[in-house]
Image (cartoon, rainbow, N blue to C red; front, side, top):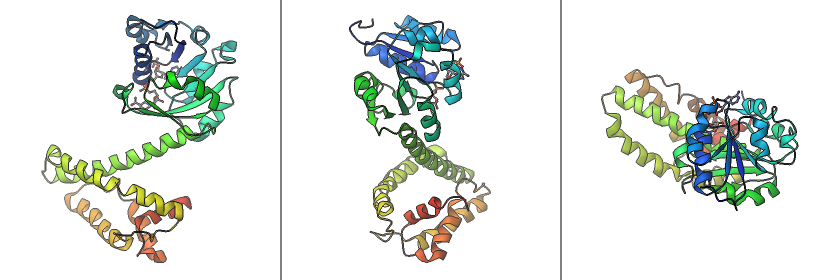
Length: 291
Ligand code: FVH
């Protein structure tokens, strides 16, 4: 049962993530009003204690704090444009994935106290200590609603720039997809030679976990723009070894396309005279933009 002494919350969007957010709010006792384009998705949540609104305006009017978790920014504007004046003066927290630029543009669209968010969790993690969520934009909106937002997981406020939550979110997703790309390539390589993925997986996890420790050293080099600090594996050596990744892919007949883009970048750093430095210097080439 909702705790009526607690502030009301509205959630727009009841996909996998929106539904998980609603369940976390209900578990924490917040009276929660929900709306979704496909109304049927509200049924199980109503059975768990949520209130269903049949229009966006009704949903928005029900709570001072309105949370949107929809497919993309276009779907958020499609939905909120139908709210009319109901949005005016509310706190709007948008947890929909987008780019920093989209978040900044969106921040000025409605007459609301705006917080943008980036959820660093998958739906089953919501409401557990493993989940964390970036927020940026209105500091007062964050401070006032921090306790409610922490029903989802740890909240990390990253600045008044509305685009910063998305920047941090996309940054972490970039790291994750880079890791997935390497992992997928590795699994294609070994399974094509007959090694079961399940035999190889614990080794992959072990090695990736230990190598993740090098991120701190890279970060120091990047901030100081000095890639000679604590070099243990210089890029000339790594570039030569990386060529063997490409050759091994060719030998077993798998596509190198997930890993191929890093090879010419490393080779360019070596050709430019940075062979004795660390691989972190590749960041300097990326920052120059597309060639
Ligand atoms: N699920 C995840 O693992 C990730 C974790 C990190 C954060 N993301 C982002 O969260 C947003 C929502 O993700 P989701 O998992 O809930 O996504 P779906 O299950 O596909 O639900 C999409 C909801 O959006 C509604 N919707 C789509 N288009 C429109 C539209 N034009 N007008 C109104 N609503 C729209 C859809 O409605 P319906 O199809 O049920 O009627 C769902 O409610 C997302 O940004 C992730 O990147 C999740």
